[in-house]
Length: 232
Ligand SMILES: O=c1ccn([C@@H]2O[C@H](COP(=O)(O)O)[C@@H](O)[C@H]2O)c(=O)[nH]1
Image (spheres, rainbow, N blue to C red):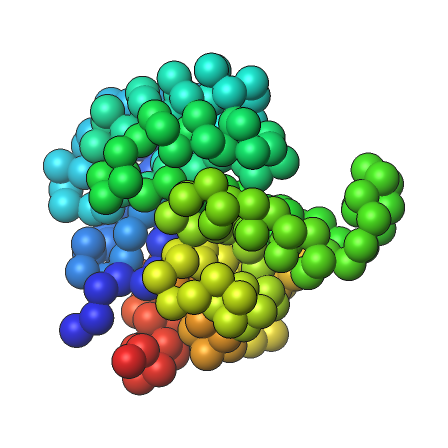
């Protein structure tokens, strides 16, 4: 059995709601992601509860602030003992270096968000960023790599390129995963699980397709089965 490649996004408004799902899941099958909504509602106590149940936790708070503030936030996140934490690459080189200095390599994985998977070309134009989405992602991923971060968040449409450019050890984490014929919701740069793995994704972040399924455990098992045979 391979290490779990699916990270279930626990986008819930309370610890109780999140635990209703978590109690059905198995740490052998998936890791868990705690994002802004759940962390704001339930805090570090919930993170500790998930880790006590044996789950690796990705704390997805996307820190983006001045270097000193991000460094302190990263230290606080790492001190919780989480498996992975992230910052936003748009914070720039000084902020990324400060984050890296705050978290010892080989402990909590430190990754950077490149371009949100909800964003498309029109969004780039709106905010005055020139270039195609994959060009922006490449630029920000190279910056994160230069600053010795462990990896990036990107869409699975960009992982073939990043894997080739940045090598096999750079961790590629991809939200925007949908089952074939699944709803896009607010995501725009999406891929099915099988394609994400074939493109070189390490970890697939999956929220609503699992949390809103009529049988979340079965959906998680099915998505896992889709990728199992493809992992070397
Ligand atoms: O670029 C990004 C970065 C983070 N996310 C987060 O992943 C999940 C995706 O949830 P779905 O329900 O599967 O769309 C969610 O928690 C986002 O905050 C992302 O989607 N894109």
